[in-house]
Length: 125
Image (cartoon, rainbow, N blue to C red; front, side):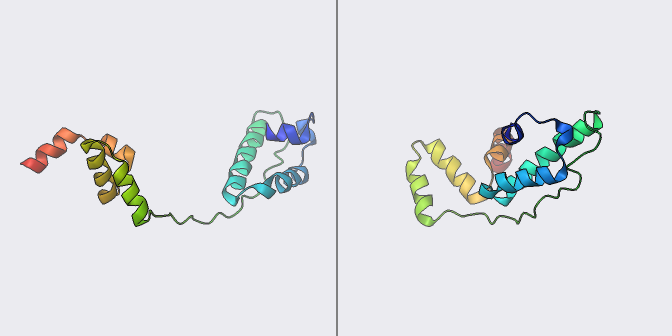
């Protein structure tokens, strides 16, 4: 959709590497490197598919490289934020779930996957 907005009603065969790089330069001005990398990945996938299916004689994105994306450093909660979360728990179950997540570092999906009866049974024995 973004490509269509930029190039309007152009034949796909007329899009070359230089035109696509120009589009990325213009549209990527307001994007973070990770977002630009996603956009390039989607573009490359679309044009690779178009080429493999015979819609294009050559893939204009084959020479376009993704930008290097550094690893993001995770942000941590401050003591004040942790206390606010504790205070916002209403039931004992919410409090227990929060304390469990905070003290173990488990994610929600990992907690949901736990088999509570087996876990409690083995801890009680």
